[in-house]
Image (cartoon, rainbow, N blue to C red; front, side, top):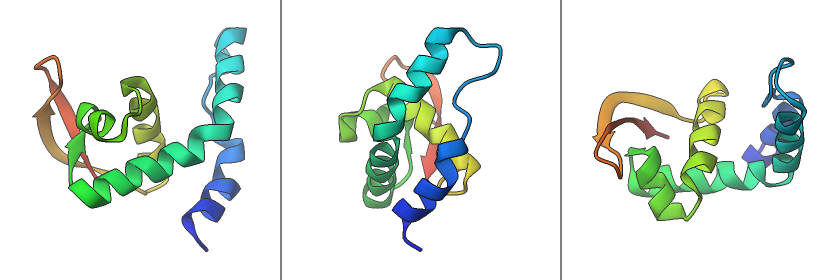
Length: 102
């Protein structure tokens, strides 16, 4: 099974919102569904091409927004596509952020 087929099977039911969240969160979670798989592909390809990176590094190399990358990283970790290296790297603001690897 290819990655896209695995995504399609897993993510229609993947929770992106809590039951206690406001209606706007449910609307946002629904609106992102059409592009989520593309984000996974872009992030995974970036990590495979450039090696371990932090959220800001991935964002700058892929042109995805920081918040788009941050949301997808945790989802991708939960399904085993990527993992934390245990190291930190400097973010664009100079703070430490977690480093991720494919």
